[in-house]
Image (cartoon, rainbow, N blue to C red):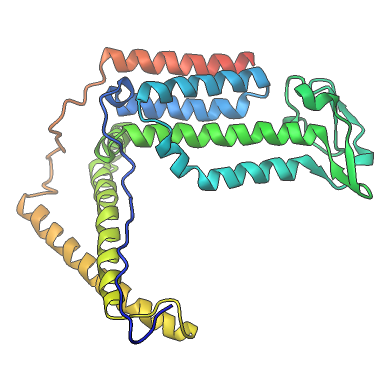
Length: 307
């Protein structure tokens, strides 16, 4: 808490950059190939309904993570909220309001499912050790179902794979490459007179302004802390006024930066009619990227269809 005799500054450390520089094969892969494979991988995860299929999907993801040479620390730092969702998936699926009416048998699981469950929740393989455990009633008819625990674990692994796959792409691809890939994906819309280049430019500028916004926020907040501003004490109105001293100058500074950027872009004749956006880097879709895309898509489709 603050005391009027004590004034201290708290340095705010916020990391908003997700890209981790590296020279791995995953870093060198074309951003368009990674995005396409990630999209197909995400869809395939929802079609996989067996433990063998999920194991193959996780094994493929583990191989990509190992090839990226990032290490597990960045993933562990980013999976806090994901861990909460995984626990909730297991808890909400594991408990049943009435374990005594769980008479709908699922031959694929080898255990009983609660009445009213849809077929989409049934997994396509035996539940393993959970299939041999009895259902436990904790309070009256409320209790734990083995089929629910198996289902919850399966959904938790699916959530983990979804988040980890997205993080691999984010950690190994720069924001510029992502925006260029987005522009290339929208390029067919040019025939419909959609300003694809302008949309990509706006998104690229927005992404690059994120760290600028956080730095501006941290600097102004630290300045107010050094003047003994109290953000956690007093009534709600007092706290709102205290935060107003942070957000008002922050937005003023952001508008000044935006105005300077607009002047710079206008001085470089941005938006001239009949001129297409160019790039300093070679954005041709090479053979290696095509092979990676075909192999990745084929593998995901094969697992989703077969398992």
